[in-house]
Image 1 (cartoon, rainbow, N blue to C red):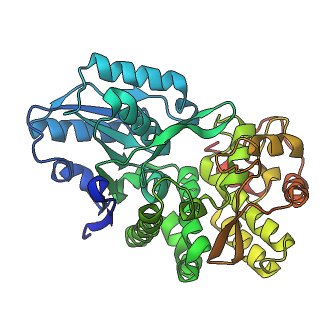
Image 2 (image 1 turned 30 degrees about the vertical axis):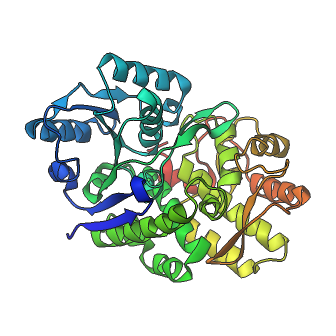
Length: 391
C-alpha cells in the first residue's frame, strides 16, 4: 500500500501525517535524521507494548540512545494527574532535554497524556504520535490537543502542543478489540456529518468494510478524516471558532463519560455516538433539521453496532440534572452558556450558544428512558450481545 501523507500547515509548527501499512517497521524513516546518540523516551500501555518494543528496537538499531519503555495501564483512568507526575518524573530522571524525543505509542489516552507531558517537561520537548487505535489515527493524534481528565470533566486540564509527526500504521489496528474499533468509527462518521455529505454517503456503503478491517477502506477513511481535520486545525489551531465543529456530539458525550466514571463502562467513541444522536435530536426539536436526518444517523450507527441511547449503558446513578451539571464544566462554555454543535442537515453543522436548556433536558430525558438499567453496568439492551465478551 502506498503511504499517504497529509500535511498540517502551521508555519513553524507544521508536520506530516503518514498513513499506510508496515510503517512501524520503517519508523526510522519518519523521525529526525540526526537521531544518533539522542535520548528517545517511549510511552505506551500494556495492551500495545509489543508495538512500542518494536519501535524501540528499530530506533536503537538506527543509532538512538533509548531509555526503557514507560508502560502504563490501559484505559481512560490513566489520563490523570498522578500519571502526569509519574511520566514527568521518569522523563526527568532519565535525563531528558530539549534535544530528546518523546514517542507516544498507543491510543488516544496515551497520545493525550504523553503529549501533555512533552508540552510541560523542560517547557516543551519534541514528540511524535504513533497512534495504534482507529480513534487516535483519525482524531486524537492530529491537531495538538493534549490533556487529562479530572473529576469535573473530560480533558479539562491540558494544552495545545503540536507533534513533530504522526505515524498511522493501519496494520496496528489488526489487534484492536472490535469494541475499540467501533468506537473509533464514531469519530470517522463525524467528518461526514459536520461538512461532507458525500463522505457520509460513502460510509453508508463502506462502513462495514472499515469495521471488518479492509485496509483500503480504512486507509481512505483515515486520509479523508485527517484532511478534514487538517483544514479546521489550520484555520483555528486553538479552537476559538470553527475547529469546535469537531465536537459534534461531544458536549453530550463528555457528560456521559463523567457519569460513567471513566472505568470502561462507556468508551469515548460510544459516548460520542450517543451524543451525536442527541445533537441531531436537539437540532430537530429546534426546527433545524428533518426527522429523517435523525433517523438516518441513528440507523447507521446502530447498524454498525454502536449504542445510540444513553439508556443502553450503565451510567451509575445518573439523572438529567447530573448530566446538565456535568455539561456545565464543558470547555465550550461562553458567557455561562454551553456551545452546541447543531445541524441544518447531514453535512451542514454549525455552532450555537442560543439553545434552550429545556429542550436539552428533553433530549437527555428521552435518551435515558426506555430501558431498565442493570446492576452489572456496561452496554445493555440490543448492544449487549455484541459487546458482552469485551466489556
